[in-house]
Amino acid sequence: MASSDKSSAAKTTVQKDDSQLRQKRMIAEHFTRLARAPETGEKSVYTFVPGNLTELLRCFDLLPVLPEINALQSAMRGKSKAYIALAEKLGHSEDVCTYVKCDLGMMKSGNVGPTGERLPNPDLLLLSYTGCFTFLKWFEILRQEYDAPIALLHVPYQADGKITDAMLRYVVDQLRDKIIPALEQLSGKKYDEDRLKELMARSAEAEDDLVWVLQSARNRPSPIDAYFGGVYYIGPIFTAFRGSPEAVDYYQTLRSEIESRLEHGLGPVTPDGEIDEERFRVVVEGPPNWTHFREFWKMFADEGAVVVASSYTKVGGVYDFGFRHDPNRPLETLAEYCMGCYTNLNLPSRVEMLTRYVLDYDADGLLINSIKSCNSFSAGQLMILREVENRTGRPGGFIESDLVDPRYFSAANIRTRLESYFQMIEQKRSEAVA
Ligand code: SF4
Image 1: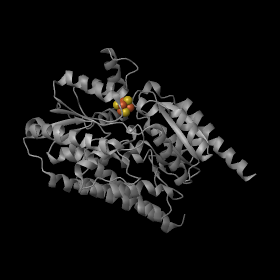
Image 2: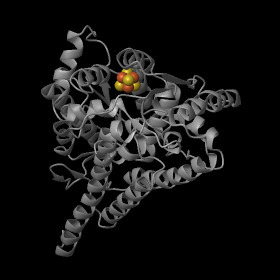
Image 3: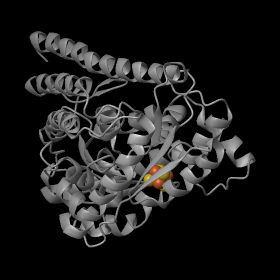
Image 4: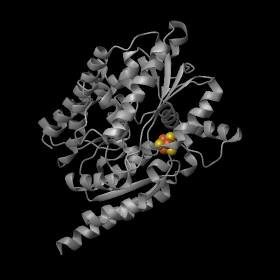
């Protein structure tokens, strides 16, 4: 690399830090606000990432708390093992989703969130039921523990791979007749649709920038890792910040950093530095492991393997095929958003999506990380793998781990399988050349 390029690289690393710092600050401020809620009187609503109604909550000045995010943050801080052990001691089976047990263990240990501050008890449990039955059971348990009311938005599964008018009406009617009145009662404020429209216009702006960033991985080398790096990029938009000016700023900053990386022909930044040579491009299906996140990422980076697209970065919303929150149809697009998130898609739609990713991002193949805890992702994955292999003619790989239970992360096993997978890709390449 020429010296001017090197100085540019240093500059872009600093710029990347800008977006990371900005995100860190946003999260810290949110958790501080939550910790102070008992004194300030602000109300908190526990809700889930897939199909979340963040703009609607913000419209009533309510504070979202996302239990899955707290669970994964606990895992990244090495706390999930003890929390899960406590939940199992209290009688929750080894087979239960480990996000649930981690959350319960955290609650029973004082409900201290990722920033070290105590989370407030929920004033409402808002369940947007999107493709995962565990969500229902999880909130049943929380209702017993907190004696908090539940508002349930039933979201029809996309069994036939499309959203019909009847499905749309069904969700919009629930939003208007059940969810909004519940939020009005909790907040003591009237529903203000003009305010919701303003929030949605900001959502769409941030969504445009996020999609640009994710699609930058079509370039060679890809300037991003769309799985390990991608989980940071989706953070604000899938959690408490969609619709906020901070989210718009964050995604503008992120986009300009990636534009700069692209301009200088740079690959992704990993926790151990930049990837010098992009040797493999893969699409990954399934959530990451959080207990050994850095070690897991390094296994890819050491091989020069870059993830160019992933299904996990669509778990809180699929934006890259054109969906945006639309201020002109606020309740309708909220309904479409809930029905369109990844875990609410049927298996043929998932196969279609992953096939497009492999081809559009010119990947070497599809790799599945099958998560023990999560049936919403894992059911049907072997069929998906074979089908995508058949349609693309590119080899698939399969590894297994868990979300937040460190007992199910076998580093040696995963490394061996990854090495075999990358060798298989190389072999296919040499056969194609011969
Ligand atoms: S089973 Fe999967 S989708 Fe459902 S709560 Fe657990 S991790 Fe989330």
